[in-house]
Length: 116
Image (cartoon, rainbow, N blue to C red; front, top):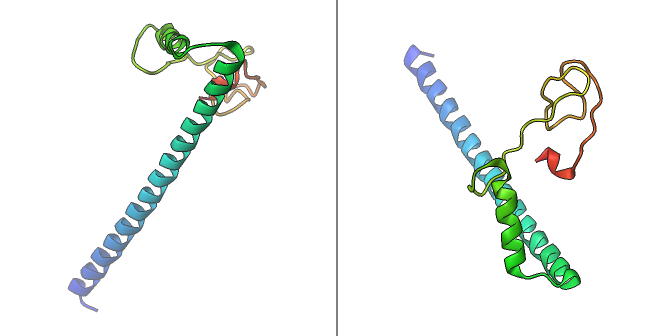
């Protein structure tokens, strides 16, 4: 096998790997889009239940969304929550773990939304 053949084989392998990665990313994108659609449906169903039970209006919901959005000081469609600190060592906690990465102390969530 010549040097040119080896180089050509490497290029072909790299191209095939790039195509596999692209297909994988497209599949992941579709999965995320499906999850977002499902969450939207669930949120709408929950809102309709709550609205009916408590005689609320869409305006009440929009006002609450704006209030929560502004809780971090910016009206930007997001809520930036400062990381919770470990009660034992005072270092910031990961939102993905219930245990401090630094000292190992177990920390429990204050809210289900702490993981978002």
